[in-house]
Structure formats: C-alpha cells, structure tokens
Length: 537
Ligand code: GLN
Image 1 (cartoon, helix red, strand yellow):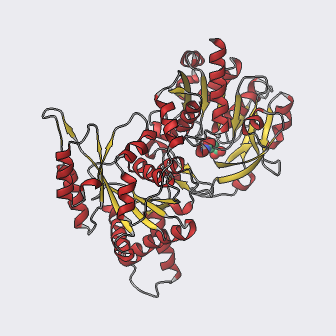
Image 2 (cartoon, helix red, strand yellow; image 1 turned 135 degrees about the vertical axis):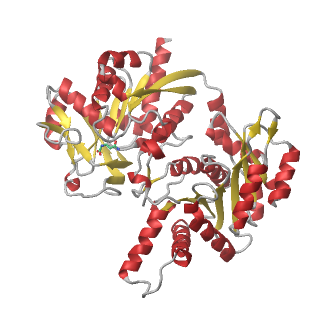
Image 3 (spheres, rainbow, N blue to C red; image 1 turned 45 degrees about the vertical axis):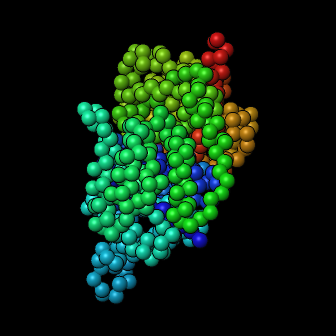
C-alpha cells in the first residue's frame, strides 16, 4: 500500500523544499523502498515549457516529453528514477482539464466550482500517479509558500486526501526558515510558529518540521518549536546550509529523518545502504585538483537556467576527483572576437548549452571557433550543436552564408532548418520534438567509445535540426556524424575526429546525468580536460 508524504513550505520561498523532498526520497530508496514524486505548482501556466528561464530557471524534460519544473531534475538525480508527465501538476493543467470537461457537458449542467471540482481533479492526479508508479512512498511537493492565494486549492486537496486515507497513511512535512539575528545571536522560531498556525487554519497539522538554518538549533529552541507547533521533539529536523546539496541526505539521515517518517507512517524500517553516496560526498569534499569549465550562453545571470548542465559538469568532475569551477560567459560579450579570446584564455573546456532565438548567436559562433582552432575541449548541446554545425559550415566547409532559419528565415544556406513535422505547427507549449528518442552511434567515433554501446536513448526539446541537404558537404569537409536517428534522417551527434574533444549533440544529455553515474558525454569532456592537465603536469 502506498504511503503519501506531502511537503509544504512556509516563511519564505526558495527554501529548497525540492532538495529536502529529494533527500528524503534518496533515504527511502537507500532502504530499498520504491519512491515516486509529484510536484504541484500553483501557477496558471499549463506547464513551465513556455516560461522564460530568466524567471523560472531551467525547463526539465522527462522521458515521456513533459516539460517540467527544475525540481523534477533534483528528484530524478537524487532518487535515480525516471518520472513522467504524471509527476508535474500545475493549476493551469488542472483548470484546463476541468474546463474541457465542462465544455463537453460532463457536469450535466451543474455549477463548476473550486470545491469540489478543482480539488477532486487535484486528488485524481495523486491517484493517477499512484496507479502508474505503484510506489511504496509518494512524495508530493506543493510549490510556493503557505498563505499564497493560488496555493489554496492544493492545500485543501491535501487536507481532504489526508482525511480520506486516514492517520498513518499520509503525513505533512512543513519546511520553514529560522532567521538568525546577529545582534542578539539568536535563531528565531516565531515565523515558523506563525506559518504552522496558518497551515492549521486551513485544517492541516504538520507531523514533521524541517527547519532551514545557518546555525545549529539549540535544544531549547527545538523543544519550543515542538511544543508550539504540536509535533514530537524528534520530528523537529534541522537542515543546515551545506557546501553541496548532495550532503543534505547524509545530514538528514544523521538526525533519523527517514526513521521518523517511517514511524509516523507505520512502516518498519529497513537496513540502509548509503555507501555509494558517502563515497560521493567524500570525493566532493576532498578534490585533488580544480578545473575551470565555461558555460557560454545567454541566461548566465541566473545559474538556475542551466542547473542540470551545471550538475552534470559537477558529476563528471566528482568521478575524476576534481572540483569544477564554472565560468559564466555571456555569449553577447563574445561578439567581439578579441573579448571572446580574452574571456576564454583561462578556461580548460567550454560548453555551449541549449537556447532559443538569435540573440548572442554570433558570440556563440566565436566561442566555438576559438575552441575548434585551439583544440579546447568543447561540448555543444542542442542550440550549441546547431551553432557548431553553422560554424563548421561557414569556416571549414566554405559555406560562407550558412545559418539557421531560426535566426534568418530567408537564409540562402540553411544548414539548420525546421524539422518537417514542425513546419505546420502552430502555437506554443508542448509542440516541440520532446522527450526520449533512440539514436544509433557510428562505430569508431568518440561518442560510441564513451557510451560503450551502439544504441542510446536521449531526451530532446527543439524544433530545428541539421538540414539533410548539407550533410554530404559537411561530411566531405571532415565533420563526423557520429549519432543518427534510427531512420538516418536526423543528426543527433557530430564530432571533429582530430581534436581532443569536440562533440556536440542535438539532445539534452544533462537530463540523464546522475551524481553517482555521470553522463558519458559530460564524462568525455571532463575526462579529456583532466587527462590534458595531467599530461601538462
Ligand atoms: N532553438 C533551437 C531549436 O528549437 C534549440 C533548442 C534548444 O537548444 N533546446 O531547435
């Protein structure tokens, strides 16, 4: 029987509820339990696919092509399980379903209301995910902060659901912040007390409090929180700021977080195996060297916009016992090639990640040209691959006017063009080539070597592709097409064979990297950088 764990947040936003939920998921998985997750986001967008990375950070993509909140990435990385469309629920998608039903006449003339129609739809999403994953534990994180008007239907649904499944089958973990006042040297508990009383005013009593704090919580304050928030003393869990997010599960395990959860849900504890994770944290905390990898993109002011790319770089670093310092390069600054050279002079490798639109493209092309001409290890992702192909076409294959029709609709040499199935697509939201597709790797290529297999599956999110009309010309000029779709129509990976590491892919490898299992393409990049450093002495 599935047990349900709801996670809410209070006091401030950006508390890291996602990391706390993902850490609990890890601790349960490390005991051999199966875990599914759901993220409820109270905004009206149907999904985050149409939201700007500047505002909302990265759009994460699942195997089945859902465009989701970046927290799903943390959940997949920590729990090491692939989730699906059912894991991502927004107010927009809930209302869309209910309104569609209303238009179809399903409500037989009744008045359609938040309670019960919206709340019933929210509860049915919980059940649908349960039926699909059949997990031992289903962790459901409610986005936003308690008291947000738009979050209320979700909170009411949780209240009803908890009542329906009964005591011992569902709990609510409430995450809060204990602000530290340096003048009095105190951690303050009052905001947490207030946020719990607000939660109670909606009929929800938390069973566990997880308190974010910069300092250790004195026992007196923990006891106070327990007493005034009506939770047991052992259920007040401290979550200190950590150097690495991957330390959080271990810090929570030390406080018996999972044991408290299991006890409240009447499940017998099992032997926990965190050996691999402890080894990972050991490597994170004791790197032998530091390398500097640049990310040259357009959303460099908000690192969350590339969070999976950053995590994937780190994973590949951990496996090499090195710390990876990220240098953010704003591609627009690289339009001046001297500035570009200057910005790239102190880096060990560079990634040009995914993106949309023409802004900063000429800068990205300069970055790639520099990497190619100076044998600097390079990984291009999605738009990064499209730019690598344009750069190669212009500067090596002699196609001076090569471009993508995304940047110049009337390009005379559209080496990158809209995919056939995209030509008649109208509207945004879920209309790109999304989710997992198979790819065949060519023997003897770098890609095939690092994957160690000839058939892979990777996640996509794009509209444009390499134009097949130009493949022969590019091949003749030396570009190797090392990964193709099974029907040989879509170019998925390209590489330049005589450079140390110059590989670019049309898909997003960053969505499949795991802390204990770095993605082959990121590993290929970082392994090359580390090997070169070693040989330089
Ligand atoms: N803008 C490009 C396309 O739509 C690349 C997309 C991406 O990098 N995710 O094909």
